[in-house]
Length: 291
Image 1 (cartoon, one colour):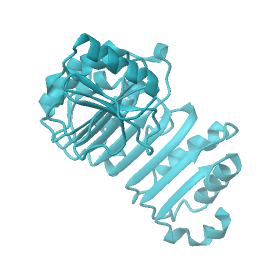
Image 2 (tube, helix red, strand yellow):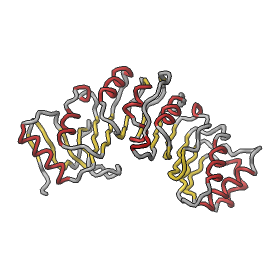
Image 3 (cartoon, helix red, strand yellow):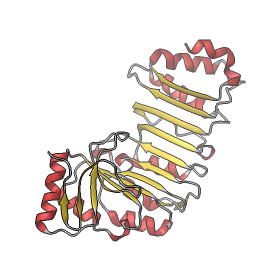
Image 4 (cartoon, helix red, strand yellow):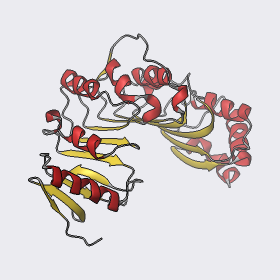
């Protein structure tokens, strides 16, 4: 299919591909032949979906992306190999989403170079034994960034200690550690107009949820979503524990967002929640749905 459009590369503005070995190889050879007349792409989305793609092809494709001088939006998804895009002109992009294997240090270095970006999402794939200790690096202020997503492979709470983000409105983090003092210091330092905070943690129990929502610095944030990996029955059990123990917390709601790849969320939203599974209000469990 790609060869049908090859004769019009000079008109390409956006390109979105899910590429296996054949298509990825074809794209590399196609762009290699147009080295003196690169397509004027402004948006590129590539998902390398096959484990059979040779690493040499992946690396050449990555190097070709760096030559796209008009590119402003880049989505790159490649889980098999290590991070392939270290030489990108990160300062050039407005919107960046990377799904790949990279170390904590790499995520900090690359984020620090996103000086023009308004939206950055870095999602990696590292087992805990691969995590590195935070390292010394100059502090960075990114004035334009309004949306940031860091999954647990970036060790977000430690990574945020390297940054000030005064324009940030949306923050999603996947937890590796739970040093929430880092997050509090980051928000105080940035003084950002944060409208939504999403925190994902696979191992939260009832005491952890209660401890999180006791933080007073959460209250001014209009939308707070905590995502533990529990079904509705277990979450209902947690809320019953809170009620029985007389735990005082802000009003909490438990709901499912169909557009989010996550079982349940607990927290609050400024526009209200249409389909609440149950809630914990004024120290009382309110369960409108029958389980």
